[in-house]
Amino acid sequence: MQILYEEKLSSIWITIIFLFISLIFLFLILYQVFIGPLGNNPAPNWVLTIIFLVFLFLSFNFIRLVIQITPQFIIVGYGIFKHKIALENIEDINRDKSLFIKYGGWGIRFGRSEGKRYMAYTIPEASNVALLIKKGRFRKFIFSTKNPDELINIINQIAEKRF
Image (cartoon, rainbow, N blue to C red; front, top):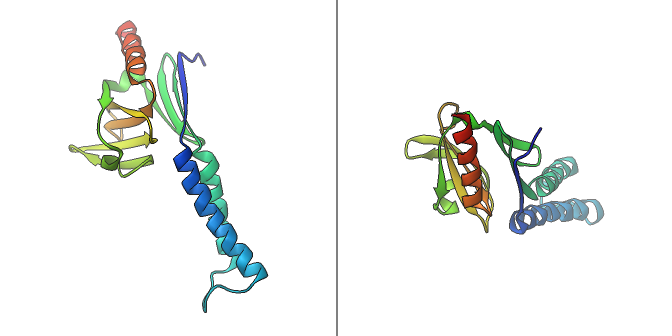
C-alpha cells in the first residue's frame, strides 16, 4: 500500500486518564486480596480484574491517533479501531473549528450535528478536519490533525487528479 501522507498524534491526557482509572482498579484488586473485602457487598476479584484489563487495554490502544492517506483511501485510527473512507466518497473537506465539547469529548465519538450523523476521532491539543461523506452510515467524519491545511491540500490534489 502506497502511503502519500502519514501522521501520528499522541495525547498524554487520554493516556493518563485511562492509566489512572486502571491503577484505581488495580488498587481495589490488591486491597481485596491482601487486606479484605471492600464494603458489605464487594465486587468479585474477577470482575475488578476484567475492568482493570479493559482500562489497561484502552490506555495502550488510545496512545496514538494515526492518519494515513493512500491514493484510494484516508484511514484514521486509534490502535485496533480504524475508520477507512474512500477518497471518491468525500464530498467536501474543511477545517472544523468546533470545540471538543460539541462532539462529547475526545477519543472516538458518535452523534448527530446539523441533521447529519457523525463519527469523530479526536484528541486534545490539535485542530480538527471535517469530511462530508457522499454516502454511508455517517455523513460527516471529523478527526484531529496537527497539519490541517497540508492534509486538506493533499486530499484536494488527489481529488483533482482523479476527476
